[in-house]
Image (cartoon, each protein chain N blue to C red):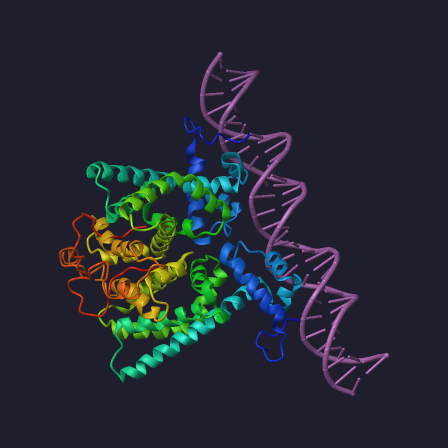
Length: 251
Length: 251
DNA sequence: GTATGCTTCAAACGATCGTTTGAATCGTCT
DNA sequence: AGACGATTCAAACGATCGTTTGAAGCATAC
């Protein structure tokens, strides 16, 4: 019989946790299709059949492994967005604020060894780029409500962007975000950008946010008046720019 | 017998090309491990054994498929870098210039349907993120000389960054670049960023370059004096930042 | 025509995949 | 002690994987 997935009450989680850890580590370096259940079970030192017993199969193991990390991220993001909204007292949130609701929880989890740790950002990126249909479907199904919430928030913050266009840009933004931070040395770059260990959330946000916000606020492709984009920039440039670098925006 | 890979003279390339196209399309949506040879051959309408005959196996097919696109990119990049150097007449190139030598050829190939087309950037990113060891090894081996050339150029442009640190940063930069450009809607974003169709190379470059350059010029993690990074920012914030978003960093 | 070299073909190889089975083991109650 | 549910185990299942085989097709040269 299949072990009940929802029954967390009196479960001996030792086996499950070891499988989670093994699957996560192997997934990080081989992907879904490149990781066999025999690799996972031998690394976790459990029997091969334990996968089917505890999770019903490979799909179940990997989706549960992802959910273990992403459910917390998802909940924290939605909660923080609600918090920002309450603080705003009816005033529509700024684009930057909505983005912060997505960033901060991810950074917090990445700093907590218990709930993700250093590899959390890498896992986030890997999950996002893995082409396995099972994972793609799982993500879009399970986290659709949260995505919809953020989509609404962005729509309120960017009333001039048509709904359909916004869908594209959000999808792209998520991709750029995950891709970028999923790099093998993402943490090293983070360390390089922030000399201090603590409170680097803010620092990273200040560097990456303008990049993404510019993309979201970019002029529409159809109704583009040629001169508008190049000459007058939607975002003021940095106060100290003496080189010819303009402002971060694209992906 | 295995068909000689180097003998391109009197070859009937119809079969090979159909296999390339099929493998490329399938690789884009399923990855290396997710694409079986039977999927490729049935899509290309060739016999299964043709893979081994023409390419020696799955590894050979996929590496050749990648080389078909990337060899041209590689050559164009190196050539453009040399061109910039000649123009500079001994003066060390700027960081931005070296970056341009990497960007422009990629965008050109992406605009040429014959040598890559719209999916070229996506392929670039997919190849870079695919975890299959064969591809990782192939890339680092075949394009090592070119990478070394660019590494030298960056080293000249950034004399204050230690060699070992530079290696890390370049690796990350390539990741961020490929990841970013590999997004499903990269072309749509490119179109959105550039209201005009022509000359968007410069525009995209001017938007993306600061992001990458900031990473390259970032203060070193070890010798960091705590206050330096946060207080005096290497990059001033936008003039309009009244929210508390500090700085982007995570995933 | 026959011979020759390149290419394609159907069929099978062994290996590995995810999954299933049924019995053995463990822990906890009565 | 015995009973029972939960968990683990070794072993095998059929399917699919990449690869190999040896013969058939198909041009071109003699």
